[in-house]
Length: 90
Image (cartoon, rainbow, N blue to C red; front, side, top):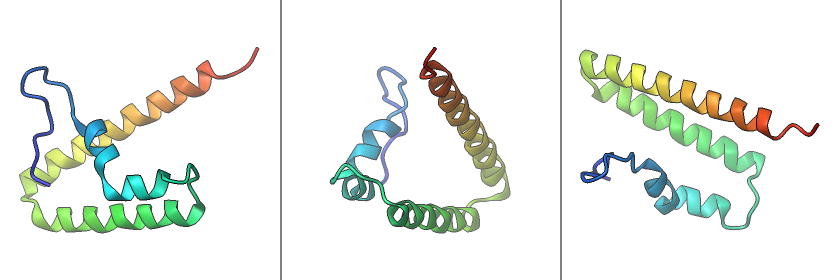
């Protein structure tokens, strides 16, 4: 999938649009349930791709990707914490 990461006109990250088009996402959410097996299979799929990416990247690109993945993980964790805090009933 050789597609741009950002919309050229708005500079908006397009990953959310790509996710819903991916076969793995559509297959897993089709029935409205996410099973432990599906989650494990997706975890293994991601690990395999990350290992392939790690081997393919130059040291400089690997350092940049590592920082980007780390910051994305921080953002995801912060969003999850914020949603958790907002959903607490009084």
